[in-house]
Length: 155
Image 1: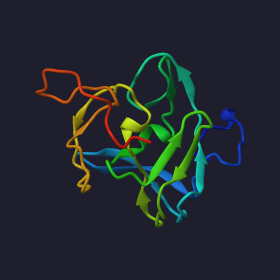
Image 2: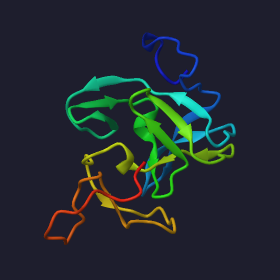
Image 3: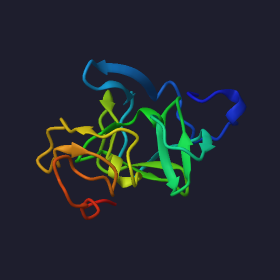
Image 4: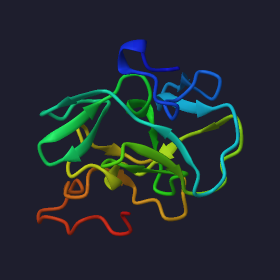
C-alpha cells in the first residue's frame, strides 16, 4: 500500500506494486506512474488523506470548504487538458477515462475538482485542446481584466 497502515486496509487503496510517486522532471516535479494497465471506465484506486479547510499544494477540493490533503498518492496527480483519469470526490475514487498502458503517468484536469488552484501556472501538456493556463474552474487567466466564465469541458 502507498498509504500508511493507520489509514486502514481498503482493497481499493493504491498498492505499491501498481503505482509509485516518482520524480518526472525539473519542470513537472513529482507524478504518479502506474505499473500496470487499466481499462477505460475501470476504478483504479480509492483516495484517502486528511480532510482540511484550506487550499494547499497537494490538496483536492471535496467541497467549497473541504479539501483532501494526500501526500501519498492523489496529491501528486499531474495536470493535462486531456486527462487519462477522473476523480469522484464524493466516493473518493479514481477512474480511467481511457485505456492506460503500464508505465504511464496519471493525468487529471485540475479544473475538474478545483474552484481555485493553490498556484496557477502556464500549461505545457501539449494536448490539442490545451487551454494554455492551469487554474481552477473560476480562476482568471492572466492579462484578463474581467472575470472568466467557468472553464469549459470540465467533467
